[in-house]
Amino acid sequence: MGDINGKAFFGAVLRAVACTRNHNDDSAEYEAGVIVPAGRIREIETEIGDRDPTTSEVEQVLALLDTVLTTKRTTAEDRAFHTGHISRVSGLSVVRAGAAV
Image: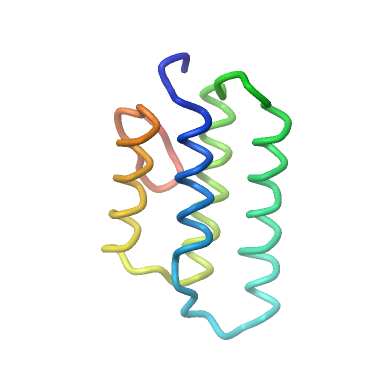
């Protein structure tokens, strides 16, 4: 995955996490499905440092993002917006529900 812009990828993913409205009132679900995965995304970003993420790392981050968006009960329209933005800014050809192509 040498063509991906890692900084733009993580920026767009973390933006999606932070900017997506939460429609889930269950605080335990929010902790497990938003706070923990978002923390793991930040850990992966730190572990990677300045190098580009591997395909496996991208897939792992997108799966974590999918968990966050599912937990927040994000609409399909909002999901499409965020995945489209991630694709455009990072150089991924396609981003869909937890997978990169």
